[in-house]
Length: 64
Image (tube, rainbow, N blue to C red; front, side, top):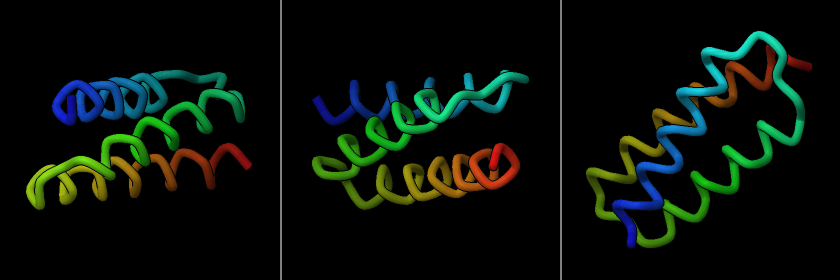
């Protein structure tokens, strides 16, 4: 299950980086996916998720 959640978090984050028109809903979905994946992940997966979160934070700050 954790791997599937990790994949979803990666896909949401990847899609946001590729989009020109990003809604707050898009950002919220990505944040939720990252949070859900983080709860049941290994230490290595948590490091990846932190990278996704940092990328998401950068997208979010540019979108504000």
